[in-house]
Length: 362
Image (cartoon, rainbow, N blue to C red; front, top):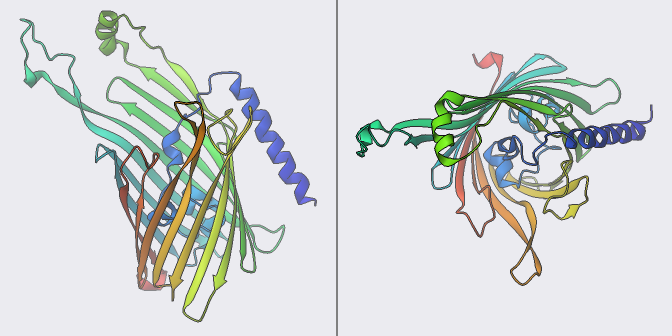
């Protein structure tokens, strides 16, 4: 079997699907909360994970990486706050082995802003301010990922995986959406090299929005805005190709270098490589380990080409860093990162916890 032909056909298929979907109602940044990343290890390494991920977060980064977990159970938890604590970002992932050649996983992601004041009834019937009438609501995005990974019989060292993804987005009682999509991934290990491929939203992900017009019509009529109607939002496919290599400096010290190339198919973006159809952004990461007990990490990504007031162009990027500590079968990771340009937003502190257990430990 010619694997080069398979890759080319997959790539052409993505281009065709994205081009066809772009003719309809595909916003450029649909479901963008799913592009932030999970796990302090990954965030500290600039999100370069597709080829090397080997814990429960593989359900998000590349489901094929679940096969690199050698424990019977793996659990990962993460919490982060963005925009000075206004937005809360939480993640939980779990995986377990079915047999020696297959693993299943479950992931939950929530990104939300809570306690948003609803001031529609701030003025009472007499036209007086009444702060007791203020109610609060949340605007939150949820994603549920059901993952499956299995060793491939095509060639030694190759593993394959897939996600079934359910997305729920809500803005209080005013609007909500449900969506469904599929991801597919692969990892291949050859000596100290690892290669990965992650195809997100390969069938495109559709979010069906519904609006509570009764709650909104008074405000919209007063402001002269058009009352929104139920609609369908499409998330176009994206492909991530990853490379990683392990280094051994001595008996106690080792290193890891990784690079991911993230390609979107929703038109031109302000990234390093861009065309009218697709744009590609590199993500680079490194990790130094001491006896697999202490880890030092750094990464760089989010390259943006921006235009200054005088018309000249300049490039910005986002550096990241982090550390990790292994305590027997528990790993505590920390990352210093953000989700915006470093010149416009403060860095965020991200913590995550990983626990690996075996049946004999029960």
